[in-house]
Image 1 (cartoon, helix red, strand yellow):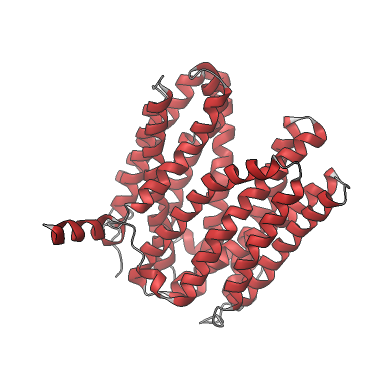
Image 2 (cartoon, rainbow, N blue to C red; image 1 turned 180 degrees about the vertical axis):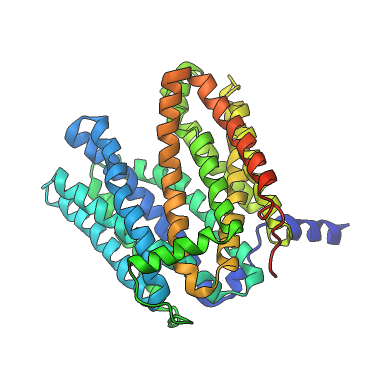
Length: 413
């Protein structure tokens, strides 16, 4: 009986097999630690900007300031990742991001508290992230066997979501000490783990000639996606999920109108990430699914249905539970999308594919916030919330039916 239970636990529990590969293990640990630091800075910047301006408009402008370099350099950075040694490119771009964090620290420590400088540093930091992130995504298949890639992506997404829970809580504790510098200093210190892990990577020169990085290379990457229905559809279902069904921008009003006040908003914001973490620690089955395309469609539909159901709940804890289910489904969706992208594309295209992935993943929720705000204004909170989730499900089902390439896709290992 004990043997049977142990076997069941191993099949369901988070698959940690990729951690047996030393370079990947160091990189995963470094990303996990540095992700907490990123959250420290994100919270500290928002609080500092509000303290300097007294305006939520300026706080919202932080996202806009970071979005433009994220899109532009996300695409261009992917072309560089295909043409240059990926280890060196990550080292340079990550160092640039680290220097920006040190700049935020100096801005706070010296009492300068310059708003223009702060916004410039945020934009530069976003640009550095837009180069380093797709490059890191393109590195993973070079470090691991294809069969381990789904487990590696699950580990990465699980720890990232854990950081989105731990980081803001830690930031609140540090900011209570009365200084933004403590948060920025904590981020800078934690990020040194990333620099160490990248230095320890083996050389990762291009495996095939890709030409010079630049606009032509970016266009070639986009043409590659356009000619591969599986990749195009995987991006499409993610955009549908985030634009139509992301309820994040409605959380403050929902907390006020439905759940008794602003204190409830924190639970709503944390619920999706908490669900993703719980989904991650019970995700041992993900890598064994053969029909990954169909599983991706199912995960996105589950996300939409759970979000829609949460919009009908008038109990805070029921809404949190349903949003946690949505978060677990989103984790599964993200793992399969990333895995399909990394395995389906040849190595000489992976940097550009990861650049597009970064733009879609980062840009989709922002567009979803805009959609949510506009539909709430037009139709009311309940209709906007529930309608968005249901529209996501319907559109994904239609897309999967009309274009069967994705639902028929099977893992290649």
